[in-house]
Image 1 (spheres, rainbow, N blue to C red):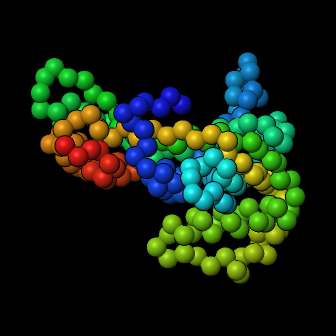
Image 2: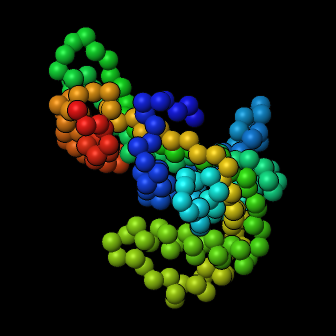
Length: 214
């Protein structure tokens, strides 16, 4: 992913929060698709360990996919994969600019992590990844669910998945949230997004929080 200089991530905290709160990622691996195209799976990917301090380089993430999905059989330990995390995003109409001529655009935030993969084809590893995934996702809920009584069910069906460990070697992030517009325009962009209901995450909050100071 190309990182536009003026749309770089405002802080490591914002990058971390985007990944943590938007864990339904794309796992992209080389080849496997039609005519050599990449293979992509939508799957939950959660943070297992972060380096202290710093960005995601050196971090460890965990994920899993259905065993019936052949992507895992195409992977060898140490292969590079791309993890794509999409944050809030939304269309920006020129009506928010209050001048003509102008052009529409799209505000968005995204994080791409390149990682070395390790395939964890073991029930013990699978249980660890599944329970860690549930812990992380339930922590995003207002009232987290206690999985204790369901662990025997997890044990029974965990053979239906294959898990992964991702060791991150590169981080790229873009936060394009109308930074190049004056505050009155950003206010209208945020208001318009909120009026539409922000169907793809709270992009209005991003525009207001990190869109700029002038």
